[in-house]
Image (tube, rainbow, N blue to C red; front, side, top):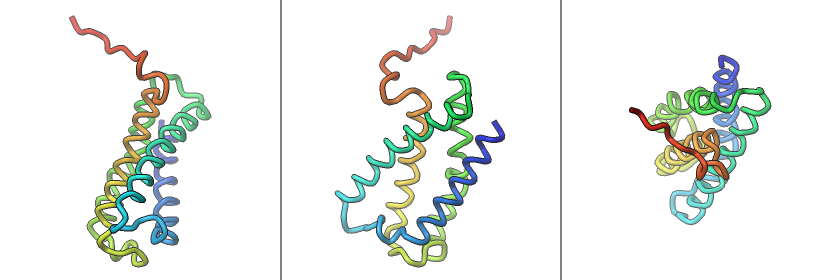
Length: 132
């Protein structure tokens, strides 16, 4: 599982660099439809990517939710600081886009978690164990 966490750190760093270089093309605070499409696409993409990572690492299916937690942990720990210091971390992006960025990171994390639980396709067959 350490490998999954390391991959999460790598993906966070690569994503942060990419957003720093080209985020001004993605985050537009005055275009809600564009932001909603970014959120939707990112949710689906991260669900798919998380499933592929788990498969590629040959993780047993019951460990996928734990793997997703470790994969998104760097984002959940480090991106609040990116939001708090948004103009410094992302000087090329309108500072008023900090909220859109924060929401985007949460949507990405939600997609990863949903992918680990089997979305799309397996959530309907998922059954919670009844405690006695």
